[in-house]
Image 1: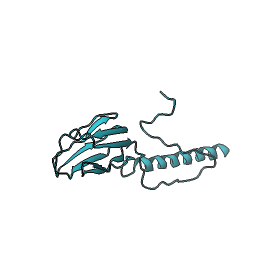
Image 2: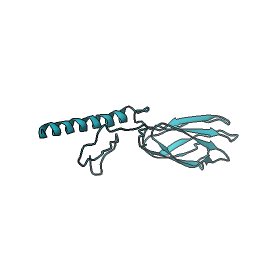
Image 3: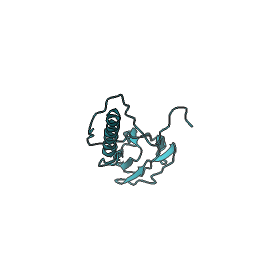
Image 4: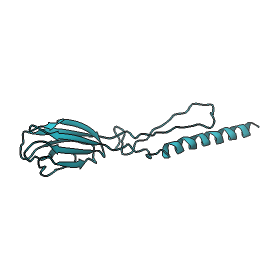
Length: 154
């Protein structure tokens, strides 16, 4: 009778784990954080806002509200970008796929500078989880983040 109880407890625990995994994998977005677009206005020979923080995969759109041509061109960062000339009243966009800090300026007006800080988004798992049964014991819920390394790991 004891072996049958232990086997039943193990089966119930395994089913609970499957329900948890199914809830995480079956989320409407598949565990991927949504992307966003941030707008930087070019006005009065300034980038407004000057410094922004976005997530990997997000897009920045520069809109030129001045009467002269501007650019948004990277000067440092993990990858380079250049919007090219942005005529008055027009916009150019860049999607950032690598985390890090990017400094940029206007090639035509070098005094105009800004920073884009790109962070790794934490995935969202909307929805509910249900455990079919509780098994006595102590358990740890472990999270996983793709492309993350522990400190000191190579």
